[in-house]
Length: 228
Image (cartoon, rainbow, N blue to C red; front, side, top):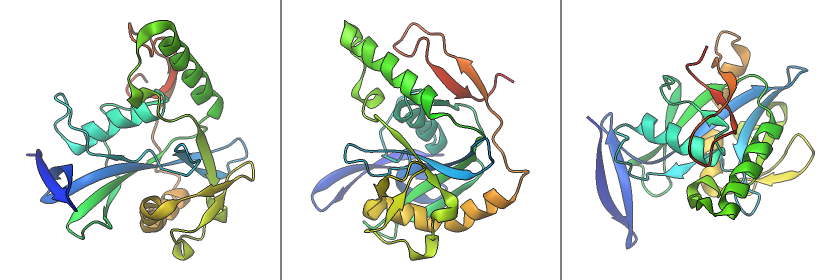
């Protein structure tokens, strides 16, 4: 049974989730997609400095989330501006990566392959959520912190040569930095990413649907698991 635990690292308190006999300090998603020409990309969120973050997050306790997968899919929905609504999706492909804090603390990297993810849907969702906040809906920061996505061509990534100073080119030729944490997650994920790219049987089947709710997500569109 998964359970939360409080730890302190260099006088800073952290929440960790204990699951499968390991202590997890965070999680991330490597989302592989294709364009109309079947070129392969990794979809990543960008932080305020335009660095790739792969929808990563520390452990944020939630009363209604009892497992790492539940926490991760809910957080993915927030950081993607409701682009990915995958609650209930079996997250069977993952890799546990030791953190640079301690070899006994892990990040779990989940892997998905979703065909034809469209940046324009994210942009429309972002604009709708930002307008809802501006009109007085008081949208939580968690739903507003990511303002851009990037698409990183997999053909141009040499996973073995990655280091914290590595700079990748996105689909538009813009330079995208990684930083220490996200470099380590991407480098450790290289083998599994290439395996998924080569295996046409590995695919996450999602439908694109308009979302109806009484919250700030009303009218947004998302890749949704479970409506097929």
